Image (cartoon, rainbow, N blue to C red; front, side, top):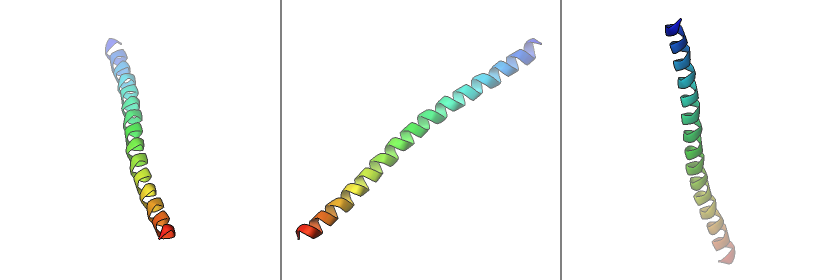
Length: 54
């Protein structure tokens, strides 16, 4: 019984750790994607503004 309980506890702990790691990885990936998207959007906006001004 002790062994089975330990296995179950280990599984649950592993699941929770995996979820937290996935959340953090998702946050970081989202930040980086947002930065890149912002840069590209800024470049395009700058180009369009330059064309209109020119």
